[in-house]
Length: 242
Image 1: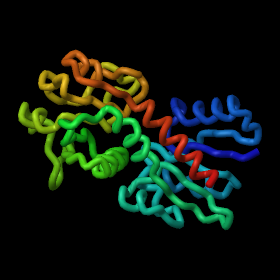
Image 2: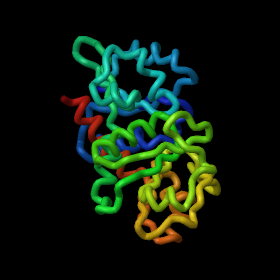
Image 3: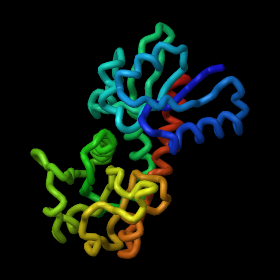
């Protein structure tokens, strides 16, 4: 039996296990199984890597901290600085990839119109780096919003009407609004959303977060993170089998 799995913390809810095991069943891939490797700290990854597994996905909070435990990174993962897919080569070396940016790119691109020239990225974690990398490939400018802004970032209370006029894509990469915390949403002025805006939430559970609901009320185009996850999962499967 070939074992694939997800590395993360408190990941019972995970999309990946259900997605891949359903895929294996429906496509009659009978020699594969996908399990969760739920580890309390990144150092425990050594125990996971000791086993003869076939490939891994990586989720919060280990997309960045796992890098020192890998033998090499592909160019995109290197530039992004975060890994969500690991390929085990025949010689046992572990190579890190980032398929998050690919999933985000593929899901956002069909929604873009000529006026979508700048984006606001809420949050500065590992997922935000993949989003920024995809935006760069799409020639879209971006600005990070952070509770503790560094250089070239702004704070939430600096977001103005002018910010929304310039940035017509608003992307939530924070976990705010994820089940069971469904009543919460990022602290932004939702009244500035218009029909020219895209509101993109990387969260997929619930399917429509408060962030998306409030944007939709102002006629914005809304999309959750489900398609991105499907695209990144299929890309990971391609990498494992290449």
